[in-house]
Length: 296
Image (tube, rainbow, N blue to C red):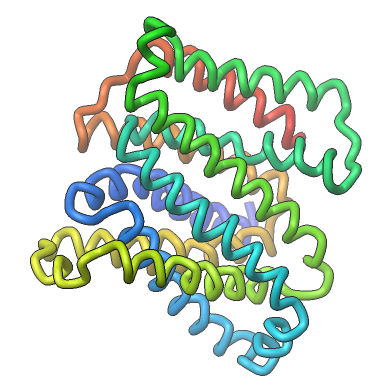
């Protein structure tokens, strides 16, 4: 194996570990901060990190030009890929297991394929259609397996799981709209612009619905996790992911994403004492197989 490949694989493994750990970190932080407060702080810190990268790699002139040219477009990207994605994910994780949320959120490629067929007229072949059915069958098994369906619809965990799936749908919309203009701007410029508007969209609801003074009593450990989620999980890992993509085929890099829910489930068990149920053990492989067929 070439040295560049080894560095790329190391970057992917580090990225997977960080993304997998983020679900447990979110669960812990939500004991002290509201989902809206965490969404705003995380997107704000990520925006600072991304702006630093833009200033170093491309310069702010290109960023200003992009913001002027696609102002409304970036508002939509910020709303779907940052604001709604984070709020729905945070509220959902608050009401379900972090490991379950990671598996449900891993359905992003399935939503991207479906939305691509609707908005980009991309063809869905039979193998990919089978992957979609497998993926959603795995989701259904995880959400409903071994439970009384009638009472479960009224439970908090069902609502939490549904919100996580909706956040995956929002991310799918974000990716599809990104594809439309990916040839005009770099991924770094697109992501930074989306985070700028996402942070702005989160700021006013946060300001009017949350007591800012409460942050004075948040524990230092919680602040460290917020910084970790903002700078590391949403900032540094983006750089590591792009570093790996430059040196490996996208298909090889994407396979590593299957490890994110595995890390999340293990850490949820070890750190949060979450149960690993039979429905998770049987449903998760169906989700992974479905995503694999979609990604091929």
